[in-house]
Image (cartoon, rainbow, N blue to C red; front, side, top):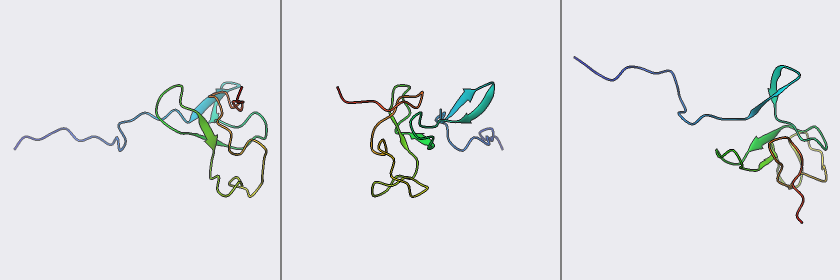
Amino acid sequence: MKGWPMSLEMSPIQRFDRAVRDGQVAPVTCAACGCRLEPSGTADEAPWFHFGRLGGRDARGDRPACIEAPHDRSGNPILAG
């Protein structure tokens, strides 16, 4: 009986939620407040947002000024201009 080869890959979409800093792989963090960010999509230019934001607070319960602002992949808030 022949079948398809098995794969351990659970998600075929590659996630880019890590950055390289000082030669180490690390989560992408906000340059303004240090909170962890998560991508809003799979495209390279998709904006990043604070992880676990809810009701104007971040995952730690803080209220940084940039909580609702989109961020670039370097962690800098994107200011409307």
